[in-house]
Figure 1 (cartoon, one colour):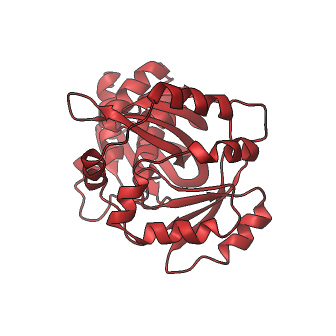
Figure 2 (cartoon, rainbow, N blue to C red):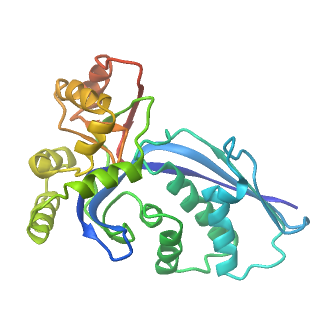
Length: 294
């Protein structure tokens, strides 16, 4: 008899994103705060133990080989790691709500969610540290989703430190129809790398965001030093990102920035009413998503 497991795969935004240099292997060393938001994909994993061992992604993206699907890779790596045998047919279904090419970690969250559901099926054989290592092999954003909510992420993203929560912040996400190539954006950053005192920056950020204020006041107090080093290059690649940021800055937000390497822009507000009023002033043919931090 088959068993079905379901969960929400929440998106993330990067409250800030600093590039701190590169490792010898070419990967960028980051310092960022990732924050889960209420936009989510729906993930379902169905396991039929009476069938032959097989992994199927039921609604794989058109034009993508199943073997290249991140959820498929996540299931394969997980089952190999726990040395699973005779598990039957595993069918993965993903209902997408998180926009792609947005800098919101949709694919990474989906992959982490598949692993979490398999953990449930196999009675949690892996520790969080083992899950983090597995996630790193799949993608830089994946480890964060084993922690969720609010966390500082360092290294290439695999060094995750949960921090004081920023839940309940009303937010607008505005995503232009076009995306930004992450490799191209990184290459532009490398041509003019940011220079700053990394240790002082980390201390300043943590001092402000750790204060005993409500989330909106903490974000507002830190706004002047919340920097996404990829935002400038992304705006050069796709100028509409800058236009969206300027439009949102006119709506009395607590803070506005691009998430990750784009192209989604988020805007945080003190109240839902201010957020909903701001949504009426968005110009252009963009995807507009009201949501909140969780």
